Image (cartoon, rainbow, N blue to C red):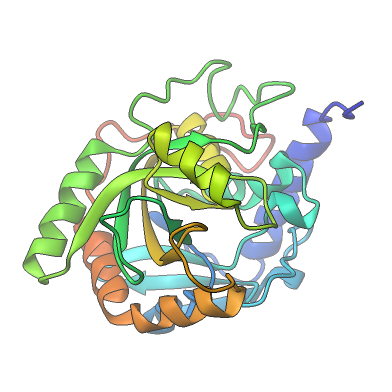
Length: 297
């Protein structure tokens, strides 16, 4: 039986993490960016950067996956105040859903109104090729887990949040414009999240294709749900690192994923930097959260 989440203790942990960060940096980010496998290089161009190791943040979940550096970089990029999470934790590492999305809720308490998610994925759509960038227009949560299960954190959002536009149509338009301006080929599609850590079987890929998935991975979806619940605007871009089982003629490996992401680093960086610079401030802004128990100011 799953142990119910102690909401009061959890909110204390979020506030403790915020205090840990504030002891090192007083920067208030507008936009948070979660960098997936092999994407940590995107934080190297942050100006006036304050780098904080996850180990320095009280209660912060620590990643064990190769290619996830495990650090928070606060600063400016493209004239915007940003927070880059270099690495994330996953369900398959043994973390509970509320732990997976802990950084997103800390980000929201730091003041951010926008979340940009990145990941590496396997291509299901047969029109895709390894190295393609795909903007998420929707997702399928095949993890069978949800970070909103348990007591509702009312100060973050409602009990039953609408997910019709979980990936902001406005940010999608911005991403399309940025891709066009930079000559970047940007695919669009539905991302399906699995529990992992095993890669999918050919039969599973055929099933996922049938139900409308264009790419598959092991992250992102829970983070998007938590951010949308917290009234943030969300966008996500996936690097199609390989073709999924059944369309791939060699054994799938994590090293292959990292290599494919590295090969796409220039267009990925250009797209993300352009998206950061052009991201609109939401109107109206979501209500600010105080540093104590998430009470709206």
